[in-house]
Length: 112
Length: 118
Image (cartoon, each protein chain N blue to C red):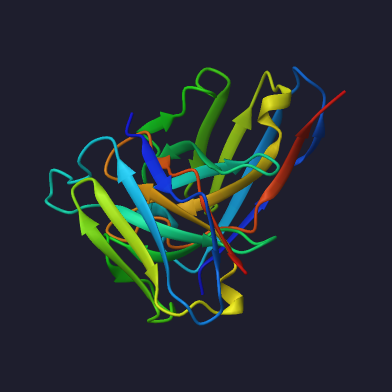
Protein backbone atom coordinates (compact mmCIF):
# COMPACT_ATOMS: atom_id res chain seq x y z
CA UNK A 1 0.00 0.00 0.00
CA UNK A 2 1.10 3.56 -0.68
CA UNK A 3 1.62 5.50 2.54
CA UNK A 4 0.87 9.22 2.40
CA UNK A 5 2.67 11.38 4.96
CA UNK A 6 1.63 14.98 5.56
CA UNK A 7 3.59 17.67 7.37
CA UNK A 8 2.93 19.61 9.45
CA UNK A 9 -0.06 18.09 11.22
CA UNK A 10 -1.03 21.50 12.55
CA UNK A 11 -0.46 24.91 11.03
CA UNK A 12 -1.38 28.05 12.96
CA UNK A 13 -1.42 30.93 10.50
CA UNK A 14 -2.01 34.66 10.73
CA UNK A 15 -4.81 35.96 8.53
CA UNK A 16 -3.44 37.17 5.23
CA UNK A 17 -0.25 35.16 5.57
CA UNK A 18 0.68 32.11 3.47
CA UNK A 19 0.41 28.49 4.48
CA UNK A 20 2.09 25.44 3.02
CA UNK A 21 1.38 21.73 3.50
CA UNK A 22 3.62 18.93 2.34
CA UNK A 23 2.52 15.46 1.30
CA UNK A 24 4.97 12.66 0.56
CA UNK A 25 4.08 9.26 -0.85
CA UNK A 26 6.01 6.08 -0.13
CA UNK A 27 6.22 5.35 -3.84
CA UNK A 28 5.75 7.19 -7.10
CA UNK A 29 2.18 8.27 -7.86
CA UNK A 30 2.73 8.28 -11.62
CA UNK A 31 0.04 6.08 -13.15
CA UNK A 32 0.67 3.81 -16.13
CA UNK A 33 -1.32 6.30 -18.22
CA UNK A 34 1.28 8.97 -17.42
CA UNK A 35 -0.91 11.00 -15.08
CA UNK A 36 -0.30 11.56 -11.37
CA UNK A 37 -3.52 11.22 -9.44
CA UNK A 38 -2.74 13.25 -6.37
CA UNK A 39 -5.55 15.38 -5.02
CA UNK A 40 -6.06 17.76 -2.13
CA UNK A 41 -9.26 17.93 -0.11
CA UNK A 42 -10.47 20.53 2.36
CA UNK A 43 -12.76 19.63 5.24
CA UNK A 44 -14.24 22.55 7.09
CA UNK A 45 -15.60 21.88 10.59
CA UNK A 46 -18.80 19.87 10.43
CA UNK A 47 -18.68 19.60 6.65
CA UNK A 48 -17.94 16.78 4.19
CA UNK A 49 -14.65 16.86 2.31
CA UNK A 50 -14.42 19.18 -0.67
CA UNK A 51 -12.08 18.74 -3.63
CA UNK A 52 -9.63 21.60 -4.05
CA UNK A 53 -6.89 20.31 -6.35
CA UNK A 54 -6.64 17.30 -8.66
CA UNK A 55 -3.75 15.84 -10.67
CA UNK A 56 -1.24 17.72 -8.53
CA UNK A 57 -1.98 21.26 -9.63
CA UNK A 58 -5.42 21.63 -11.21
CA UNK A 59 -7.90 23.72 -9.25
CA UNK A 60 -11.38 22.25 -9.16
CA UNK A 61 -14.35 24.34 -10.22
CA UNK A 62 -15.06 27.23 -7.87
CA UNK A 63 -11.83 26.94 -5.90
CA UNK A 64 -10.20 30.33 -5.24
CA UNK A 65 -6.90 30.97 -6.96
CA UNK A 66 -5.16 31.51 -3.62
CA UNK A 67 -4.98 27.70 -3.49
CA UNK A 68 -2.26 26.09 -5.58
CA UNK A 69 -0.71 22.66 -5.83
CA UNK A 70 2.68 21.57 -7.04
CA UNK A 71 5.08 18.66 -7.01
CA UNK A 72 5.94 15.49 -8.84
CA UNK A 73 6.67 11.83 -8.25
CA UNK A 74 6.51 11.44 -4.48
CA UNK A 75 6.65 15.01 -3.15
CA UNK A 76 3.70 17.37 -3.31
CA UNK A 77 2.72 20.69 -1.79
CA UNK A 78 -0.48 22.61 -1.24
CA UNK A 79 -0.08 26.35 -0.78
CA UNK A 80 -2.54 28.97 0.35
CA UNK A 81 -1.15 32.34 -0.71
CA UNK A 82 -3.12 34.41 1.82
CA UNK A 83 -5.10 32.56 4.44
CA UNK A 84 -8.66 33.71 5.00
CA UNK A 85 -10.96 32.86 7.91
CA UNK A 86 -12.99 30.48 5.72
CA UNK A 87 -9.86 28.39 5.10
CA UNK A 88 -9.90 27.02 8.63
CA UNK A 89 -10.23 23.25 8.58
CA UNK A 90 -8.34 20.06 7.89
CA UNK A 91 -6.57 19.42 4.61
CA UNK A 92 -5.92 15.96 3.23
CA UNK A 93 -3.91 14.66 0.33
CA UNK A 94 -5.17 11.50 -1.35
CA UNK A 95 -3.75 9.30 -4.05
CA UNK A 96 -5.98 7.63 -6.63
CA UNK A 97 -3.18 6.12 -8.69
CA UNK A 98 -3.74 2.65 -7.28
CA UNK A 99 -5.80 0.64 -4.84
CA UNK A 100 -6.14 0.88 -1.95
CA UNK A 101 -6.79 4.59 -2.11
CA UNK A 102 -4.84 6.22 0.70
CA UNK A 103 -5.11 9.52 2.51
CA UNK A 104 -2.61 11.59 4.38
CA UNK A 105 -3.25 11.99 8.11
CA UNK A 106 -4.63 15.49 7.61
CA UNK A 107 -3.23 18.94 8.43
CA UNK A 108 -5.24 21.26 10.63
CA UNK A 109 -5.09 24.91 9.54
CA UNK A 110 -6.11 27.34 12.23
CA UNK A 111 -5.89 31.07 12.75
CA UNK A 112 -3.37 32.35 15.27
CA UNK B 1 -26.35 19.52 -10.25
CA UNK B 2 -24.55 16.50 -8.85
CA UNK B 3 -26.09 15.17 -5.66
CA UNK B 4 -25.14 12.24 -3.47
CA UNK B 5 -27.41 11.40 -0.56
CA UNK B 6 -26.49 8.73 1.95
CA UNK B 7 -29.04 6.95 4.11
CA UNK B 8 -29.44 3.85 6.23
CA UNK B 9 -27.19 4.72 9.14
CA UNK B 10 -28.04 4.48 12.81
CA UNK B 11 -27.29 2.69 16.04
CA UNK B 12 -26.51 -1.02 15.83
CA UNK B 13 -25.28 -3.52 18.39
CA UNK B 14 -21.86 -5.12 18.09
CA UNK B 15 -22.04 -8.08 15.74
CA UNK B 16 -25.01 -6.60 13.95
CA UNK B 17 -25.58 -5.58 10.34
CA UNK B 18 -26.55 -2.44 8.48
CA UNK B 19 -26.96 -1.47 4.84
CA UNK B 20 -26.08 1.99 3.68
CA UNK B 21 -27.42 3.54 0.50
CA UNK B 22 -26.18 6.44 -1.59
CA UNK B 23 -28.69 7.90 -4.03
CA UNK B 24 -27.02 9.67 -6.92
CA UNK B 25 -28.34 12.27 -9.34
CA UNK B 26 -27.06 14.89 -11.76
CA UNK B 27 -24.64 12.65 -13.63
CA UNK B 28 -24.58 9.39 -15.57
CA UNK B 29 -24.30 7.07 -12.58
CA UNK B 30 -23.86 3.91 -14.65
CA UNK B 31 -20.62 5.29 -16.13
CA UNK B 32 -18.93 6.22 -12.87
CA UNK B 33 -17.02 4.16 -10.32
CA UNK B 34 -18.06 4.93 -6.76
CA UNK B 35 -16.36 4.79 -3.40
CA UNK B 36 -17.22 4.71 0.29
CA UNK B 37 -14.99 6.63 2.68
CA UNK B 38 -15.45 6.77 6.43
CA UNK B 39 -14.35 9.03 9.25
CA UNK B 40 -14.31 7.88 12.84
CA UNK B 41 -15.12 10.57 15.42
CA UNK B 42 -12.25 13.04 15.64
CA UNK B 43 -10.17 11.06 13.18
CA UNK B 44 -9.03 11.34 9.58
CA UNK B 45 -10.51 10.00 6.37
CA UNK B 46 -10.29 6.27 5.63
CA UNK B 47 -11.02 4.69 2.26
CA UNK B 48 -13.40 1.74 2.67
CA UNK B 49 -14.38 0.33 -0.72
CA UNK B 50 -14.72 1.08 -4.43
CA UNK B 51 -16.92 -0.46 -7.12
CA UNK B 52 -16.49 -0.10 -10.87
CA UNK B 53 -19.14 1.45 -13.09
CA UNK B 54 -20.53 -1.94 -14.11
CA UNK B 55 -20.29 -3.39 -10.62
CA UNK B 56 -18.02 -6.19 -11.78
CA UNK B 57 -14.86 -5.00 -10.04
CA UNK B 58 -14.68 -4.24 -6.33
CA UNK B 59 -11.92 -3.29 -3.91
CA UNK B 60 -11.91 -3.29 -0.11
CA UNK B 61 -9.77 -2.00 2.70
CA UNK B 62 -8.23 -4.81 4.73
CA UNK B 63 -10.11 -3.54 7.77
CA UNK B 64 -13.50 -4.40 6.20
CA UNK B 65 -12.65 -7.24 3.81
CA UNK B 66 -14.91 -10.22 4.38
CA UNK B 67 -17.39 -8.18 6.42
CA UNK B 68 -18.52 -5.41 4.07
CA UNK B 69 -19.95 -5.76 0.56
CA UNK B 70 -20.22 -2.91 -1.90
CA UNK B 71 -22.80 -3.09 -4.67
CA UNK B 72 -24.81 -0.87 -6.94
CA UNK B 73 -28.08 -0.78 -8.83
CA UNK B 74 -27.56 1.29 -11.95
CA UNK B 75 -31.27 1.18 -12.76
CA UNK B 76 -31.92 2.98 -9.48
CA UNK B 77 -28.81 5.20 -9.51
CA UNK B 78 -27.97 3.87 -6.09
CA UNK B 79 -24.81 2.65 -4.39
CA UNK B 80 -24.90 0.32 -1.40
CA UNK B 81 -22.67 -0.84 1.41
CA UNK B 82 -23.74 -3.96 3.28
CA UNK B 83 -21.96 -4.04 6.61
CA UNK B 84 -21.91 -7.24 8.67
CA UNK B 85 -20.20 -8.29 11.91
CA UNK B 86 -19.97 -4.68 12.97
CA UNK B 87 -17.65 -3.68 15.77
CA UNK B 88 -17.00 -0.49 17.72
CA UNK B 89 -14.16 0.29 15.30
CA UNK B 90 -16.72 0.71 12.52
CA UNK B 91 -18.37 3.65 14.27
CA UNK B 92 -17.93 6.51 11.84
CA UNK B 93 -19.46 8.95 9.45
CA UNK B 94 -19.71 7.22 6.07
CA UNK B 95 -19.42 9.21 2.85
CA UNK B 96 -19.97 8.19 -0.75
CA UNK B 97 -18.01 9.82 -3.52
CA UNK B 98 -17.39 9.58 -7.23
CA UNK B 99 -14.16 7.75 -7.99
CA UNK B 100 -13.35 8.25 -11.64
CA UNK B 101 -10.51 9.97 -13.45
CA UNK B 102 -9.21 12.33 -14.29
CA UNK B 103 -10.96 14.24 -11.51
CA UNK B 104 -11.28 11.71 -8.71
CA UNK B 105 -13.43 12.47 -5.64
CA UNK B 106 -14.96 15.62 -7.10
CA UNK B 107 -18.29 15.24 -5.33
CA UNK B 108 -19.17 13.93 -1.88
CA UNK B 109 -22.35 13.21 0.00
CA UNK B 110 -23.10 14.83 3.34
CA UNK B 111 -22.34 11.59 5.15
CA UNK B 112 -24.34 9.21 7.30
CA UNK B 113 -23.51 8.25 10.86
CA UNK B 114 -23.10 4.64 11.91
CA UNK B 115 -22.78 3.98 15.63
CA UNK B 116 -21.92 0.51 16.89
CA UNK B 117 -22.67 0.22 20.58
CA UNK B 118 -24.53 -1.94 23.04
